[in-house]
Image 1: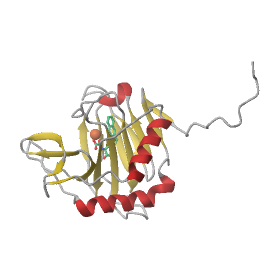
Image 2 (image 1 turned 90 degrees about the vertical axis):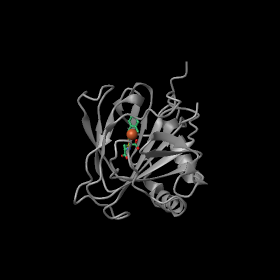
Image 3 (image 1 turned 120 degrees about the horizontal axis):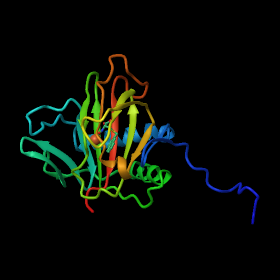
Amino acid sequence: MNQTPDLFAPTPALREPIDDGAWLLRGFALDQADHLLEAIQQVAAQAAFRHQVTPGGHTMSAAMSSCGLLGWVTDRYGYRYGSRDPLTDQPWPEMPPILRQLAVEAAEASDYAHFEPDACLINRYETGAKMGLHQDKDEEDMDAPIVSVSLGAPIRFLFGGLARTDKAEGWKLEHGDVVVWGGPSRLFFHGVAPLGKRAEHPATGAMRYNLTFRKVRA
Ligand code: MD3
Ligand code: FE
């Protein structure tokens, strides 16, 4: 038996358990944040941020874009993933490698090996924008985790359980934070509280961006 500590074993990234299968990696994206924000602007130059309308007729307060093979679309007829941006009828912009790489590394650090996202949704929040409690269940592959990256102004994230009425816990998500949701937590209700009036960050002013990486097709 070798009792000598292995000085060269990889150190696991500092991670905080949120729930079964869910990890908060505080500051995981911090050193790349400027490059990630540039990549977001490049995507937005081809697929502009837009406020989509839900089937219930409500205009979403968060503006959205997408990149990768698939993007998420909602309109009066329903929600779906599609391969073209309805604003331009063009394929969604390719997922910038720097974004994909970060998501794969965060999944790996959370013990989800071989994550291959085919969609990256980009949410942009301005003061007062929010996202009500919902489940992400439009994806075919529920074995894959969802990786989320927060950039810019901080927000209060709400995380409940499998039932809409389960009590939701609040977490602060800040610039550079990454959260990985898989296993039992994959279908939990979640949302974000309205972006505060004084919430800001030097890199984005009063705006917050959230990237979510998904594997939609099984
Ligand atoms: C928990 N976005 O795009 S990210 C979404 O901050 C979404 O923009 C929020 O919910 C945002 O669908 C929250 C954190 C998050 C994302 C996906 C999850 C938490 C999740 C999927 C399952 C469980
Ligand atoms: Fe969600």
